Image 1 (cartoon, rainbow, N blue to C red):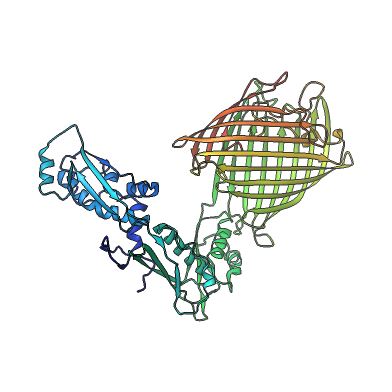
Image 2 (image 1 turned 30 degrees about the vertical axis):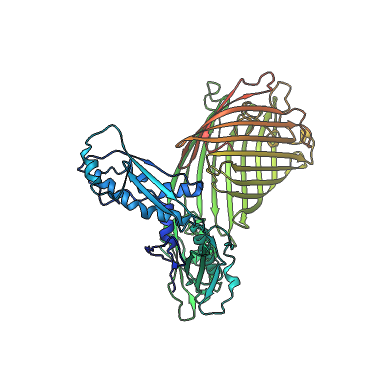
Amino acid sequence: MRLKSRLLPLAVSLPLAGTLAVALPLAAMLHAAAQPPPAGAAPEENAEEPGLAYSVSLPETGDSALDDAISRASALEQLRERAPVDAFGLVSRALAEANNMRDALRSEGYYNGSSRVTVDGAPADTPGLADRLAARGASDQPVPVVITVEKGPQYTLAPVLLRTDPPGFPLGAMGETGLAEGQPARAQPILDAQGRINQALRDAGHPFAELGRRVIADHDTRKLEVTFLVTPGPRALFARPGVTGEERTRSELLARMVQPLEGQVFSQERIEKTRQDLLSLGVFGTVRARAGDRLDEEGRLPMTFTVVERPLHAVGFGAAYETRYGPTVSAYWEHRNLFGGAERLRLEAEVNRLGTTGDTSDTGGKIGASLRTPWFLGRNQTLTFDIAALRERPDAYDRDAFTLGALLERTWSPRLSYGFGPQIEFSRVTQDGVTTDYQLLGLLGQLRWADVDNPLNPSRGTRASLLVNPIYSMGESNVFTRLRAQGSTYFDMLGDKGSILAVRGVVGSIVGASYGGVPPDKRFYSGGGGSVRGYTYQSIGPRTAINEPAGGLSLVEGSIELRQRVSGPWGLAAFVDAGSVTEDPTPDFDNVKVGAGLGLRYLTGIGPIRADIAVPLNKERGDSAFGVYIGIGQAF
């Protein structure tokens, strides 16, 4: 007997003694344990009748997994408050509970178990019980309902069998079932094994594989015999894929992106990778992939990607606040498909340190433009041009600059990317009353690793980056190289994304030039939001003659933060940050500054809104007593 993957409920009567081999439907065994009965499903409910209050006493079987399954399967418990019933509805619900308990027992491997339900001390099938309950009238005491379960012995698995049609199909392509003889005969592992086998067949190039199963309970041996019935179907290669739905995007670009699928062995992973490639262009809101339901005349599998384009233009705003550094506001406008090749033109502006001195003398800002061209001369390769004019007025220095840059980025894998490109800068920098003009030529190289579950609010995984930036100063005729490595990791401590431990570390060094040969704005600084909270922005490290931050040639930072969800979108955070900046290129820990604090989080669709307050634990003269930081997104 062959059962297809879609299972139908089947009522089976099992005796308590004797030998019987019966095919059992796992869907029915798992149904009640997997989800509560839908509201309104009970036919006896009558909204016009007053509800009869009742309480439910669930059994404790000594098997916590079974107790959970019983609780989820019980319609009496799940519908008690959501769907009130009258006396007749309560009795009807109690009579139907036997099937729910049977499914819960079988879902955990108890095939000879039994259950009993009493309502107000009487069996649910007692004649006249509903009339007696209705005659009680209104009462402050709910009707007691007691569910009793005798679980019996837990069955175990017999050796699991795989049978193929046609016979002789290599079983190695189906992978391991993950089921072992003697393990408890629970329903969910069997369903999981079927899913793994089906996925293995599809990954091996069989898009039309059919997989059924036969399950037999032997009451003499207390064994469950499971046989998977496999019809693999043909092994398929992709035909030339097509893309439909584009309006402004050039069809030749899309054809070039999906063309590598042609001739490849069918694989769901390859389909998803191509779909993600199309999404990464940034011009499509959705991309759907659909494989044909039969092979074409050449014996290949047709494949179509349907795209829906996003609006052509977008506008965005941002804001942040930090004590002493003041508020920052930013805005951008972008064109998402400038020439039809998914080129993105972005114009952006930022104003910072607003009102920190009562006038605009310390106000800084930026006006810039960037042009991003995806799939530039290769797969998953992006070229970005940047141009910007900057005015910076932190406590450490004054800087007015004009910058040009280009960056060629390539995605090596879903987690790993790298990029490099030239930089040109013309700037005027003033520190400690001394003004210097710089003409700089640089080459930026970067390597990034990202393996987190959510880029805006990660709960597990790791992020890391490495930056190598050699720079030639034409006025000083010297070369120096900025090196910076950063990593962060996230631990879901309880497995429910409610308690997250986040750890961050940074190390940096500038080599190749003396301290005075490195422009002040290219040195390392520490302190402030996203760095060492509690300290003024850029305040950690060497000082100038007038006690302003001077920056250094080495940097070490570390942070540890516990993020705790409290209720709904609200959460709290507790953190400790530390950092050190020195004039020597070799990092050291002789003068580490430590800050600690608490934060409030409110989760939104674009990431958490963050408000932190921190204090310096070993502050020096001139350091603030505390710092307040407000922004969007986690600190790291």
